[in-house]
Amino acid sequence: MTVGAFCSRIVVFVGQDDSIVEAAKLMREHHTGSVVVVENAQHGAFEPVGMVTDRDLVVEVLAEEVDVDSVAVKDVMSPDPVIAGENDSLSDTLKRMRARGVRRVPVINTEGEIVGVLSVDDVISLLASELNDIDSLILHEQERERELRVEFSEA
Image 1 (cartoon, rainbow, N blue to C red):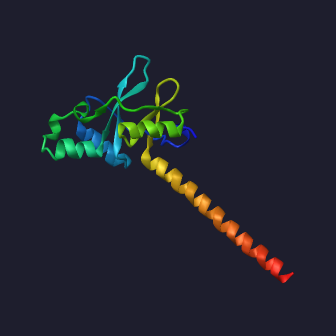
Image 2 (cartoon, rainbow, N blue to C red):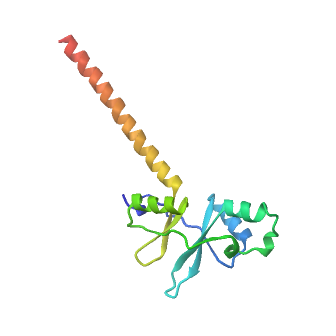
Image 3 (tube, helix red, strand yellow):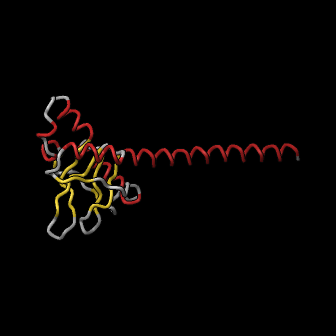
């Protein structure tokens, strides 16, 4: 399984010098708990340089009662994000996420352009779906076995 098969292809991003208010508004507008912080690379594609989460805004700004107008995204972002290639193994990427203690990673294509975001929520949805399929298989097998036993006992 590859990262690209399970990541969200909707990416919300901000620049390093954008205000945290703009980042918060984007999170609200797009119903997401994070934004990817980008810088414009020389070849014109946006490259991920950090992540800002709703938790960053609460813990670093609101809880400290910092004037929101005096803080830029670069002041609260987590720099040097774990980045996954869309063709990377999902298992290997999850191991890297666990090692760094992050729940979301930007996903890039072979040209280094952002094409998605993989979150722990995406993986949980995948696992829940897979477990549901396994449960359905077990129930179907039990039902089939009951039907066969009835047929043999009537014969």
